[in-house]
Structures are given as structure tokens and as C-alpha cells.
Length: 150
Image 1 (spheres, rainbow, N blue to C red):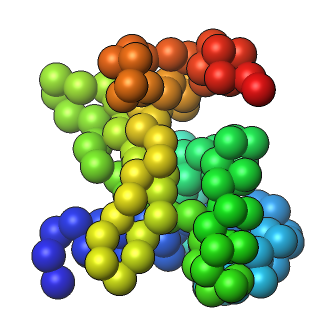
Image 2 (image 1 turned 180 degrees about the vertical axis):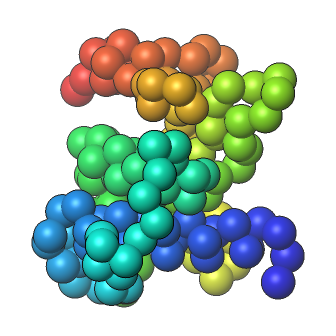
């Protein structure tokens, strides 16, 4: 398994665990989603610092809750006859030189990944930015939603 595939699997599992622990809604309204049972909170090590998988799961939940992402998820669900949903791929992670996660949201077919949105999330405060590739500009989430309001 290549590094990207491994990251996608980890993110999917982490997001599913986070959703099942914090939302208490099996499948979060998405009956085709695979959710994994999370360990009880008492059995988890207690720490004041989030590890990267917790942060990435929290980011995934945040991205999946954006109304435009939800709309694309409904679209993918309808064209795939209720077999697929929107996918998130973490394309970049923060390091010494970058403080943002880069996440693409799109349709993951058997042939290729078709990105619909490019999100950047600040690792410190989890603020969300959207890169508009047509306009070659980065917006805050609220600015982007206002500019693209139909």
C-alpha cells in the first residue's frame, strides 16, 4: 500500500471513530458509510495534546459539515445510485514551514479522484480557507460562501 492510500485509510477510520464518538448518530445520516466502534473514553489514554489523527478526524468532520460539501455528497449519492459518497484526501500536512492542512473533497471513482474543492485548514485554530482554482484565489470559508451564493 502506497503512502497516500495508507493516509486515506487512516483518515477514513479516524473520521469514522470521531463521528461515532462525538455525534452519537450511527452513519451520521449516511447509511452507506462504514462506521467503526470507538473504544470507550475511559480506556483511552488521557492527554492534553491532540494527536494528528484526532486533529485530522476533527478536520474531516468540519469539512463534511460544510453545506456545499453536503450538497456535493447528495449529488454523488444520487448519480451513483446510493453506492458512493464524497471523499476527502489529505494532500498536505503541516510541517515546520507550513501551518495548514490541504484537503481535497471530491468523487473517488475506480478510475480516478475528481476533486471538487480545495480546503486549507489552520492547524492551530482549525479555521477553514477555500482555494478557488478558477479565480486563483484563496478565500475564508465565509467569503467563499458569500461570493458563490446562488
